[in-house]
Image 1 (cartoon, helix red, strand yellow):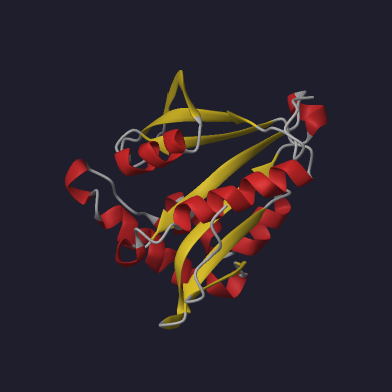
Image 2 (cartoon, one colour; image 1 turned 45 degrees about the vertical axis):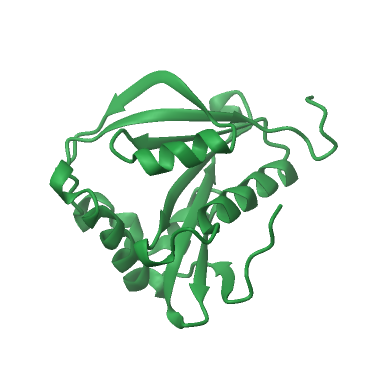
Amino acid sequence: MKKLDQKFKQNPVADTDASSLIKLIKSCYEEYKNQGVIFDIQEEIELLKPASHFEDHNGKLLGIRSSFDPENLVAVCGFTQSEPRLSGTRKMELKKLYVSPNYREHGLAQHLVNEVIKEARHRNIAELFLWTDTRFTKAHQLYEKLDFIKQATTRKLPDKSNSEEFCYRLAIKPANGSMS
């Protein structure tokens, strides 16, 4: 796995990072504005207290900052984990993968997803899954490059963007490479 370039620093996102996080996600949504993607904080209220939200769902939101702009997040990716007694299996959901348009092509998204996969192995997770808007084709390419498998399942969301999402799944191999 490629190491994070020295000009970037990874840290967990804190609740005090809310405005930087919102700015980052808005900038990513802007790319899809002509396809009807709308950012509405009322539909993503968890962004106002991101660390608390992810902690409440047995997860974490990881952030990357650039040495050129240390006050602002340039990439984020998080995960939540459902209770095995509720879902019947040990799963984690990858959530909120966003990279600033100005910081693409540095391997930040792949780095963050690999960090989530590493955490999944540490937690003995059998499967990592995610939902992604059908319009986010660049993200689909990344997930497929990382061996996520697109499922036949889609879901429609009752949001202002009229979102429809694909589901992707990845079987997590233990660190020693054998499947349990």
